[in-house]
Length: 230
Image 1 (cartoon, rainbow, N blue to C red):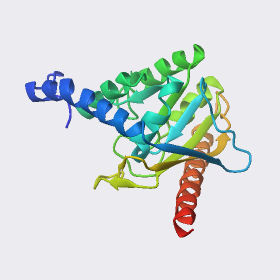
Image 2 (image 1 turned 90 degrees about the horizontal axis):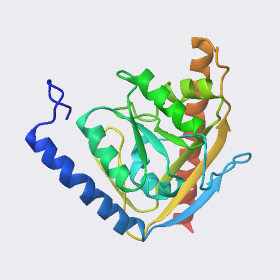
Image 3 (image 1 turned 180 degrees about the horizontal axis):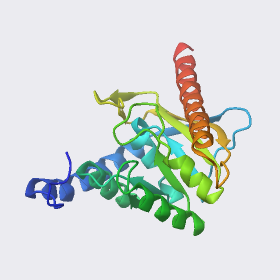
């Protein structure tokens, strides 16, 4: 779904915006209180602890477990201007997150400048690196551009519930089941490119970030699979 052509939401969308975020936040709080988190990290990685600062990235399918786990960090997140983005923003705000509007295609520059201001205030920001529509496991350039603007490193992590319902969506969205163990997997941080880095350098850094995110995912999947075999 997206905003109507006149820029205003339909009556049905406005009803959904009033009901769905409250219901989702309530359900996530109820399930989240039962989850057990296990932090793992590759050699050289430093898992973040609240109050954190800097830039962090994760894959879109991890939004629900990440939304609960990182609520104490008081992060701000870049969210698209679409109706779906509005649903996510209102839900996360109920959990204590801030939101900045923009995307890789529309409003991106304004969104990055707003996130720059958040970082300048000493607060962390987070990206769903392959969102909002994918393709899955392919990071956008936004986090890299923000790192170049600020000099901040980019932290990469992946959250994998041992027991979850997988939605039939482009990102195979994960809905953790109550009382599940959730692995929080960290990769080594990616250093920021120079502020005046050219397009080729930015792209190389994007690939490096993508590889870090995938290492975090593979480590989490391997850890859960090993635990199941015991």
